Image 1 (cartoon, rainbow, N blue to C red):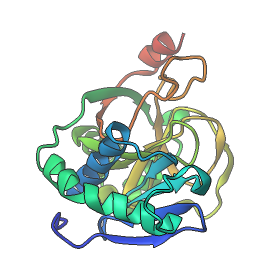
Image 2: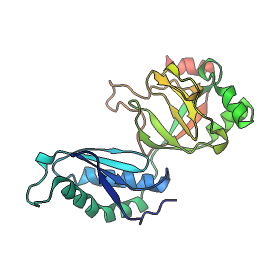
Image 3: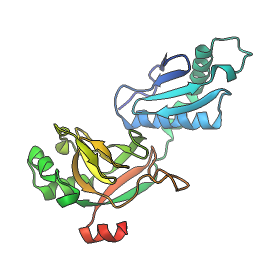
Image 4: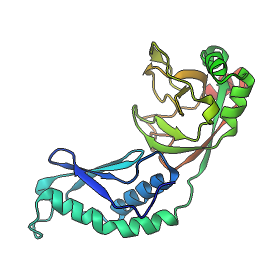
Length: 239
């Protein structure tokens, strides 16, 4: 478990960005602190801050040097660092009171044409394919961040028994909705892209749609559970 009272570490990323390192490992407590910091930046934006990007253990803050307040007289990096340091006590307090996000159920048709690597994962875990499905669908996952491709969720919570190395040869094209495992991670391909994760199933849900008011179905902080469905259910939900 992360130490929320640990000293804050910051360092520059070029001349217009700053990285806050808020933990050393993928951890729910670090995730809560990063989310709390992000909400504080939304509520109390410093003029000149352009955007922030949360990740597993860091929050990268981008700023426009010309738009920062000039009254302090500090160089841009020191000015932003000072501002973020001042937010740290409130972020730590908010992280302690952080409420889990909504639980989202993701229907998945496992195996067959939708999960061509299910047997590979089963053999690596030394269990049956049915046991892989049961273990994968039993767990509750946390969306730590969204990235790689628009709407792609990075999830924590995979049963350690299912940890399986990536494919030696990545596929040139993985369909949208494919559910895969790579090491201790599981995730869902949001768009058709190349990929080397072991594919165990597919969801008919669209994780990213630029035409929706909220293009990404999932966001950091949400909880997620996979629900096994039949091929007939997949076709019905996809139509």
